[in-house]
Amino acid sequence: MPSSVLSMFPTPDPSPDPVEAERSTGILPSQSLREAIANGEVMSSEPIGEEQIQPASIDLRVGAVAYRVRASFLPGERQTVGQKIAGLSMYRLGLEGGAVLERGCVYLVQLLESVEFRRRTSAVANPKSSTGRLDTFARLVTDGGKEFDRVREGYKGPLWAEVSPRTFSIRVQTGSRLMQLRVRRGTPTASEAALRRLHEQVPLIDAELGRDGLKRGLPFTIDVKGDGAGGLIGFKAKRNTSVIDVDRIGAYEPEEFWDPVYAKAGGGVVLDPEDFYILASKESVVVPADHAAEMLAYDTLVGEFRVHYAGFFDPGFGLAETGGAGSKAVLEVRSHEVPFLVEEGQIVGRLSYEPLIAKPDKLYGQRIGSSYQRQGLTLGKQFKPFIPR
Image 1 (cartoon, rainbow, N blue to C red):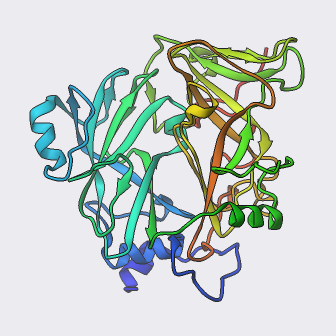
Image 2: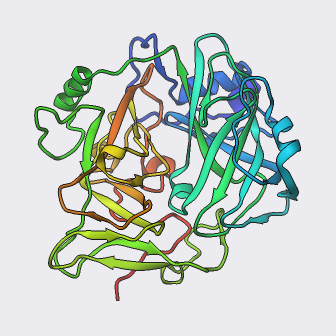
């Protein structure tokens, strides 16, 4: 690695022990992501800072211009994103000094980062946790792409973000980080047996699993009891609020944007159609140091509602040795079409686990400034802590 790159990415104080050998397939850990930047597989029009490199992902930054478009789209294999924008764009917004993306609108923004992947290298993207907790859709789009959030093997070209605020209008500027990218080598395969072995080695949730508990991933349930009747169990987003600047941390009073949801004596919560809720899992979640996890965003088998827009869990999330014991999965929830009752013990989603090719040289936690380690029911980092009255 060139000395100029080494100076850009100072060697972190590693918390995990290095592994003796790499897997042949899997997600690239932080040290391999630095190598991908150094060899030109991941590039940017602005220098990529160490703070963008997470244990198993790279934070992606919005560029200088947002295009307001009439509709969401996928280019298809014969067109570029730019060609589709030319036919759908209504106007453009300059983001260098900051601009407001209005709720209910769809925008396309070219990201500062681009890629030139080699054979056997692909990637998957997801909104960052704080983006999802603001009820903002952020999906990756590529030239010739036929799927959202997927960068096909060997892709060479720009990366775009489709951004659509659903509840709150947001303010962003060039460099705002709304999404993250996980880079894969090869095509890892997952199996129920491998997930069961991993759960036996490092309990992934603090709950017993039934015989069929690991089909389609690790199940989790929703907490609708809290500390008993009258206890706080969630938040429901208000409508017609002021704008939220995504780069301001701890700046906003929760009461101006959210209504608290409290447990009822009869149990359960009725989700009103199209309203947005922040809830939490009943179980604590653990992601081992050599794995990453992703929450399945939507499963019609458990009901007509969507759980979790931002589905990445980095290595070290919930680990006791990184200060994460007791960490819950915070759920971004929206019911569709009809009111829907969720009750204690009801499975509302599943986690899939995927190995890294090696342990990362840093883990999720306070040592690297992670926002949600040891979280319970937690709003996005833009808000001050909620104090029940």
